[in-house]
Length: 257
Image (cartoon, rainbow, N blue to C red; front, side):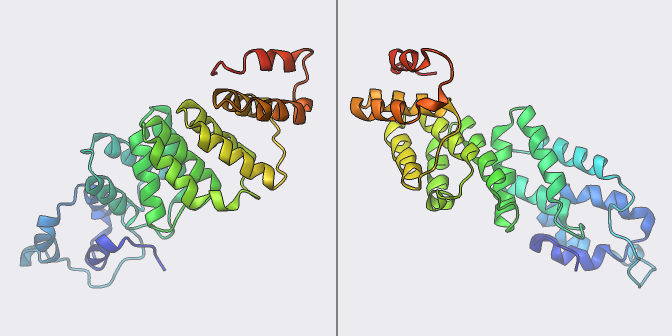
């Protein structure tokens, strides 16, 4: 069955009766749909009633390439007012005529928004995806946490981590753990950083990057936990391959990177 946004489900039956030559035009106008116009759309003047009574074997936007659809959505998201209703409405309209949820296209759009450092838009798009029950992967979670951090919403990133990820520390990829440790480190949330690392150690998780150990050691140093700092540096000394790097790490442990 074709995936449809609940907000636009009342438009589906109406628009599927349109003549094919109007399909692309109607598809693009969906993103500018005004709820106040819904009565006029659902009840057009008699002279505008379509002559075809059977739904054609195509969907609105069928003649528009996927690349053009993605480009159109990206441009629309950048031009819209910064409100949840406007962004969610545009996204609902964009997917209203898709047979399947276009997760691959949305990932491309999210990457494009990241390149333009549109962090607030990235957060909005991912939250909309999650509200639809889509994109529940560690990769998406990491993208959301990074965007929240860059959008100066670290407390929200922390809350999301605790709600969605913190209960599965035995299986969370190290890349995502490193991201959260870095978020805590940059924002001087040292107690949370140490708590996270201890939770990983409790599951005998072995870090594979010496930069993680440096940040943890620095956190212990700044918290005045010198014995813990020495313990960590000694326990994971195998990660430091350069000669004298342990001494250098200890000497610079109070400096943030």
